Image 1 (spheres, rainbow, N blue to C red):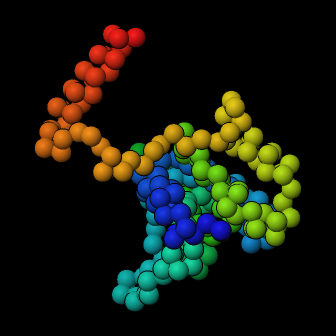
Image 2 (image 1 turned 90 degrees about the vertical axis):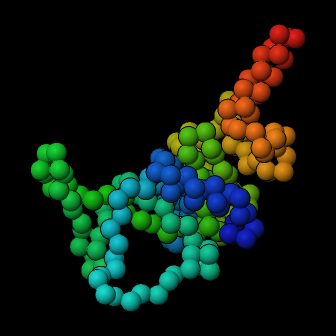
Amino acid sequence: MLTFESHPKEVQQMRDIINRNIYYGVLFIKADKSLRPLNGRKVKYVSQKKDGEARGIWNRKEHNILTVFDRNKQQEDSQGNLLYYKDEKTGKVKPLMNAPRSIKLDRLLFFKAGNVVLDFTGINSEAIKAAGIKPQQLEAEKERMKITTDSGELQNPLEIVDPDTITANPNDSIEEIVMSEISEFYRNDEID
């Protein structure tokens, strides 16, 4: 089961991607046990808090929830009224999209952003069994979301680098480090 504690690097990577305003796709199991694809990116978000209102802090880690933003869903206020904004260039009133959605991490199956693909089907296999999702359904969704590589295996090209494994001298400037890496690259290229 995927949780903040069991896979902190993966959860942090997803949160970083969401907060950097990058387009992403997600596949998860809804409460009614159906598969739900979602694509989104974080943009302007309207808080539901009213001026002077004291609200408690809701701990997402405690509830094992990741907040994502759905590009195809319009934001609503606390009474359920749809929100709009006025486009400064055209003066037209447009719907305010990218509604926030909460996803339980133990029902998250895939997260994709560019070349980063995280597959949680193995970790959350209990949720898949409980929802009665067939392997053919998962394969169809993987194909629709284009999350397979030529070899059919999922990959994650971004590596989280341990600072202790970096061989560069920390006192060197970035330019010196980059120049030494470029020199090393060309030196190895001449040997080949």
